[in-house]
Image (cartoon, rainbow, N blue to C red; front, side):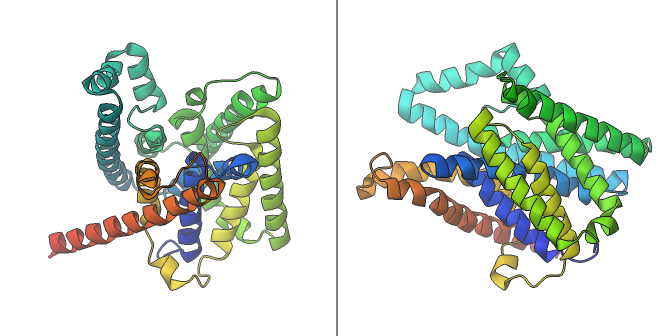
Length: 333
């Protein structure tokens, strides 16, 4: 399995990328809220996949992955910052730009940036810096040969802490700011650890009966929606873990499933859909009035908008992937 492309996983990653879009670009009304709550499995899944393919790899390979993530994070931050500056300039002029950069001089902003992965250019980029931190930590974990038992105990403990501080306190009416929970420490490490655990015991996951997978998926979806409407928005729900379980079993059991060729052609697009969907969504909002369309007045447009963002983001991502592939080929030659 490790030496061939997991086709099912490629499809799942693409679906997860679209769910991230639906978290930030909501459908109208309660439908949007329900879809957003279910989509909370997506980012934990990306951490989990990274962990799954990091089990028992050499420190040098981890270092290489960390460097790749660092480059990607820098490029994404630069792109999002340029767009943010342009937005500030068009709405507030030079004063807006000054106010934007002045915020980076504040100690609390720098603390959130370096310790909690909170970025100013675009909030969703926190994931890139969080996974970078996780890889750096895992490099030393591997270097010093920390036992699997210690890794799993730490990961599961941090996962419990995340759920208690998030959904657990929400049940009691206590709200914790999301960046205290949504960071490399309380989401990145535990979900990465789940991936390591799944890889080590992949044969056991493969033997899980299909009916249990379906039940887990249904429970996960229902719990996420009920919790969202009852206790408010969270970065991850208990239901998200049930969905993760179902997806892990699925891509392990059906790694060589027949997937439509057009889906496989989108391999690698999920990363760029994740990075650029917010920019694309905002540009599209600015373009609608030019065609006499209004998001506020048209319920139909509000519901079509998230789908259009997925479509355009996929096209942009596909172009980037193809250009990157051609550049790599030239470098090899």
